[in-house]
Length: 338
Image 1 (cartoon, one colour):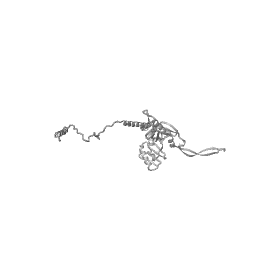
Image 2 (tube, rainbow, N blue to C red; image 1 turned 60 degrees about the vertical axis):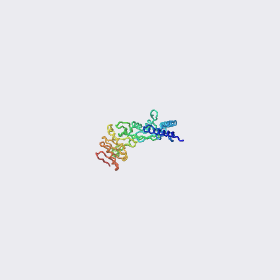
Image 3 (cartoon, rainbow, N blue to C red; image 1 turned 120 degrees about the vertical axis):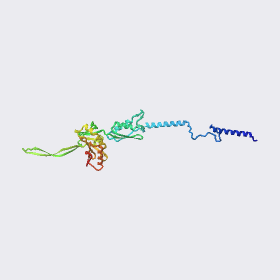
Image 4 (cartoon, rainbow, N blue to C red; image 1 turned 90 degrees about the horizontal axis):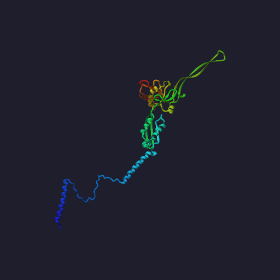
């Protein structure tokens, strides 16, 4: 039998509950919804980043990576395979290769922080090695390249700091101020170009017959001139590729050498060797003018009053056009050659 009172009571209670939800919504209070049939477990927010648990497995992995990195580092630092032992040197003609090699080895044999070998490939400091070489030797520049795993290539550009003086008696190594460093050797007899002339000398002899004289004529060879020609190839090979300056002994002075040494070095380093050949030696006149004797058997008379750069440009232009045996640059704004 249908109970109308109970049904009315339940309907009213349900209606009141809905009205309370509406009131709570209007008042801005939190509304609690009833669970529906899909509300079994709390759903995860796909945009929420949850903190992962720091498991023992992850700890072991991190420790393993750290130990592997340390082991690799120690292997690279201390294993002989990664210690620089091969040194290649190029560009030096005056400085001994062995001297450079000993200096480099001493630099590499040092300890960094009392423990790390300086020869370790990853700790070889190119700039430090360059500073050491530049301080110890007369060098213009040094380029150092490391090649994995244990090689360094050293390219040096030397600075001319000495000259070889030929005073017709000896070859002497001097500095740019004319001070003697070492007497290398005496001038050889084969380094003179001597010109002779034939002369007839007459002398009188007596005979057994009284009053009779006999005049005897004997051809003789007499020295007319003597020109010293330095054996530049041999000297450069034996004593180093320093500029050879020839000054007659009566003109030799520290003052003259100091005056011309800078120009000598400039000419020696910048002469257009590729098209004109190298400077074999330089004759120095009392006035300070220079005569360059080129190994291709021609001479260049330079001027000590005109800029060397300008004279070099003229020489390059002349040599590019024709073969010559003589260039004279001692006239202002002009040059003569043949």
